[in-house]
Length: 139
Image 1 (cartoon, rainbow, N blue to C red):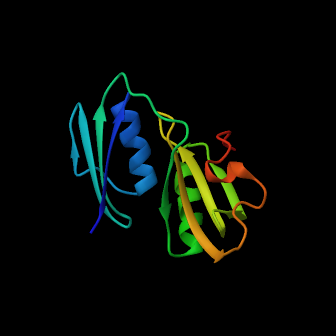
Image 2: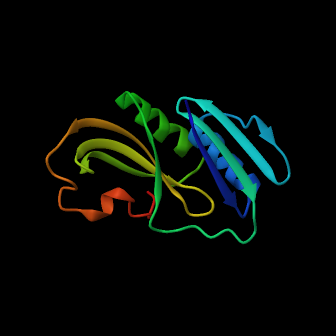
């Protein structure tokens, strides 16, 4: 089983470059108006369609849960090496779990987190409600 997401994008080439880096994978299909990524880690089928009128909701974000803390470090290195701005959170409490994570933003403004759950907690956000979307500033 895998998850399928279909996202529209104003700039398909920039989005393909971003998702190639985020997912550490090349698209299985890439046309002038469409690209398709098929990955096994995570189990994802991501379709990108060019649409110059794309509007992205600011109240949503997307995430990739990883099974080991070094996978977050690899994601940080990969994203930075591609010249992408990242927000790194280490040992932060978010959504009832202490996590290490890195945030990156796609060309249309979608926030993506790659995260590792260190431990479950009884506290939702450590008093900081911005954890579930990052601050969007980059570093």
